[in-house]
Structures are given as C-alpha cells and as structure tokens.
Length: 171
Image 1 (cartoon, rainbow, N blue to C red):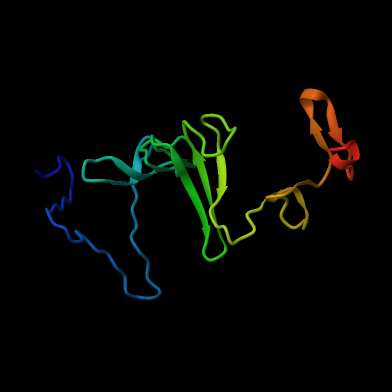
Image 2 (cartoon, helix red, strand yellow):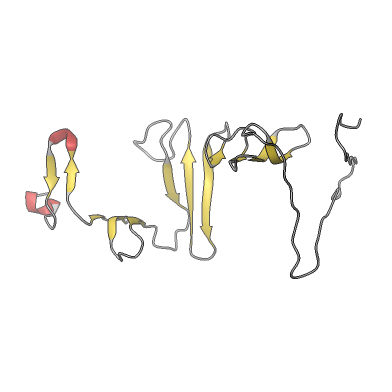
C-alpha cells in the first residue's frame, strides 16, 4: 500500500538493495535531503522494516541513534544493557562506554558509566588534559593514578599537596 501524501513511494519485497544513489564524478556531491521546520520534524530518518527508529537527523541539527526525538546534539538510546558507544582507532585502541542495570566491574553500582579498554595489547590508559599543554591533569594506568596538581577529597577535608604521594603517609 502506498504511503498517503508521499510524492515518491518505492516498495519491494526483496532480499537485495532497494535503491542505490551514486555520483561517479570525483568532484560531485552526494545525496541532499532537507525537510521540516521545527525541532520535532526530521530532515532524515532511517527505520527498520517495522518502523523502529535506527537514526534520525532533526531539523534543529540534533541526531538520534535509536530514537526519533534526540534531546541533545547527539543522543544514543537503547533499552538493553551494555555498550552504547565504541571509539575505535584502528590498530591502536578501542574504548567502550557502557551503561547497565548491572556493572561489568566489581564494586560499581547499577547505572554507572563504565569506560572500558578493549585492546589487551595496548597501553589501556586514560588521560584528561588540555590540548597543547603536553601535560595531563589526570592520568590513569593499570598501576597508577597520576594527578597534575593537588588531589582534594572533599568528604574528609583531605588533600595531597602537589608532589606529595600516598607513601609519604605510610600508604
């Protein structure tokens, strides 16, 4: 059955590709899609055969994966536990960002964001810093947590002054 009010409706019950749009000119452009004039209208939407959202690009520029109503610039939505995002630098490292009802890490509570290194042959280090400074504010390895400044623990009014280590306290 053709979709109501749609100018072009192509349907086929096939196991092969339904449509293939290509521009073989090396200086040409690809597919241009525009639509909608409010944040609730999509400019581009992909769905599975049962019309479940795969991804949506809304008229306000927000992109949703697994949702038709992204709340932020990029919204990833899935009801199942587990990895929601994987960052992959081919041949160097992969990192998974996971959220779930039960953690894969011991001692971590339900609903926590887990950042998990996926390559055993790489450094498996996490660092937070500022571009161009060359130094990390925080650098976590599998054996150390290194801070570029003072470490404050607010709950007990305790801090490590810069350069002082836990071993200075018999730790």
